[in-house]
Length: 168
Image 1 (spheres, rainbow, N blue to C red):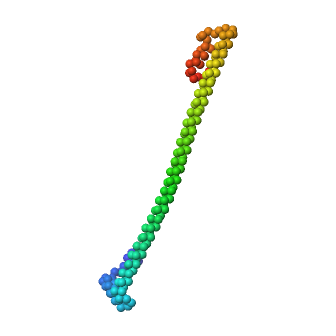
Image 2: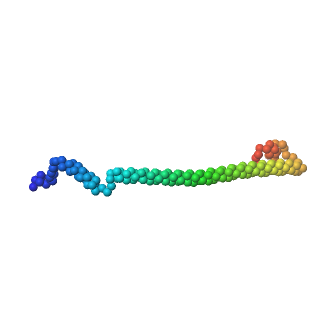
């Protein structure tokens, strides 16, 4: 066998039979339809018009229903979002108010602690000065008086200047 024997063979028929046959079939079908149609052409056209009218009305009703449904959903969603936003705003205001109250309480506590500390420092200074005065009085009556440049006198001068440092 040769290569030509193994290849498929295609046969093409030439002629206008396809288009002519289609047109003849369409004409015969239309004629048979007119002969056996239960209604006249005018009645068929009226039925088609009625069907189109019903379709338009149905489509209009469905479109109206759809629009109403979308408006309902939009309204409900808008209302729900408004409620949620109101709750969020209230929550933020409440937290802000609590933060402001906490800040005020912290400031008040800091002021109170500062005044307590200042009072204690003042008491400590007074007690230190009193102790120095008692010690100086006791030393004056005792063994001998101290010289003005000694350590005790220097400590007393530093305490009276009020440098804020408490002796150790």
